[in-house]
Image (cartoon, rainbow, N blue to C red):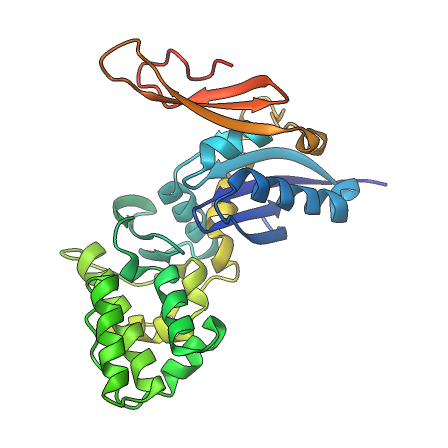
Length: 322
């Protein structure tokens, strides 16, 4: 039996861990969207073990890429050939899907990004990792407070006839303002519509201020599934929004594309550790290096008491050593 040659992309974030497998024609063969739940090592292992169980005998992993806030961790555990930041990964994925994309809106569980491209090159970007009012976790909390499933949030917003104006600059103020609007007797639909408008206002004010957002505009990240937010963006920008087929795992898709390109351009041999290594016991520990005044925090990954990788230093003393 001929096994399918594929490339893996892993995007480890604070809320979700996403894994994709693509073939040599860049088609997505398999994808997973897992909750990180504060345990990135376990979420990575869970995702890869599931892939191995379902299709492991039918595939050959020929390259691996890692991205996201936990990319160094993923690279150490899996054996990545490429480690890239989220901006690069999302831009590559969007361009592969919509070649003439000019603006990328990305909203995840805990952060949001805007990426602007000119002549197929990233020329400006901004990230918001501080304010929760512009993220998916904010919407999750408000849906729970109102008493509806987050999956129904968008449909409620579309039913709104007169969306109320909610202060969206801060999650704390937005919550208190929403409660006040409830006490005033506004309908659930109008409050949800107002929340969608508030999130979009917050995003545009914080990330897009002073920037020109040209079409085509692509919306990526888990929040792109919320039709209420999509419509609010279209209303605010006055243009149609494109939602890619694999909008929820575009970071993982992008870094899988980069892994394929890197491995083929180099020796053609991957550093992938294989699925068997997932059975070991991984631990993470940190310490402060006292070698100089920088006092860097060194993070070390250990597999069954054997050091696998270190990072966090500014001088290179520990990076790459185990």
